Image (tube, rainbow, N blue to C red; front, side):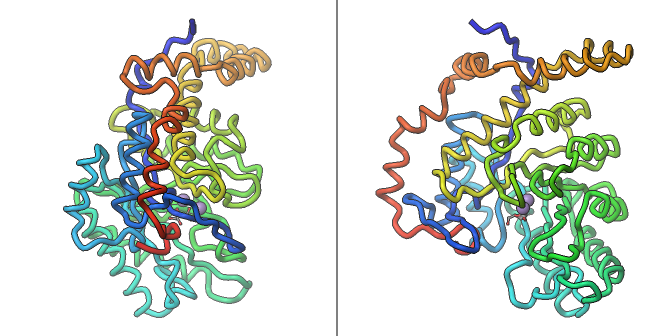
Length: 387
Ligand code: PSV
Ligand code: MN
Ligand code: MN
């Protein structure tokens, strides 16, 4: 019998899954195809619904436009709801067309900026139909060589473009601006860090927030400090969770550094990020290059759940006491106790109480779903580059 008492706060944990995680992906060297890969956005939604059915943790799916473009978004919304999931964040895409070679919202040519702005306005039209709250903007904009462009003028053009997009948002809609310090640009990117995203979104207004992708920092960056600071400033809008060893690896969250995920979740809980009506959306942004995609997503949401529970179990009173006494080792021991707590048996019981399988990974393997889709779907699309 487990002695871990699960706080009620865990009930409201919801993690949004990305449609592109279900497609084939790889590196610039090779994309390995996997049997059963979805051929359409509807099939991606079916797979995402399976993850939610077995875990109870993933009630919404993020779309990427134009990868998930359809004729009728209201019909797609109904289709998703019929499967028991909602359509979530709409991700724009200005990084794969030739016209954006030298930038999109920051481009020096007005006609290119116009095209990029119009794409974002179209994304907001889509949000109106899908019922999505968030428009997520990640830009590949940047330069490869010092002197290539005027980096300050690019900030001004970015601010101008963003303000036009922001003005089109409905009352209940938000813009989240994601930062990344390199890639595909190697010298500078136009939104490299949380400070730039904060400055730009602060200038826009209270419907604009920062998106923190855990894979988008230099090695050794103290990400939980950024989380604490953004929550303190009321500007943390969303997470893109994944894990990384070297670059933007997009591996399963909690796989490379479970302790870092714990430390992040401690700050999320501390900053009210799990409370009802919190501003913080928890999302995955991952690719499954080698492993099977659906179990990869199941493992991911379970990892977030496990670390969230450990963060909720942190004895904050004991920690505060040790901190007050400047008892460094006692404070650290309280912190580590929570991290080392094995919450898996308690979570298995918690799931059973809610009519969910105690072991969602095993339940998926036993479900026969993978064989069903392997047989039914032939000729899957590469994530992001097709239907
Ligand atoms: C960029 O590296 C990124 O993390 C952004 O979130 C994109 O939207 C996502 O990848 C998908 O390409
Ligand atoms: Mn991301
Ligand atoms: Mn990324």
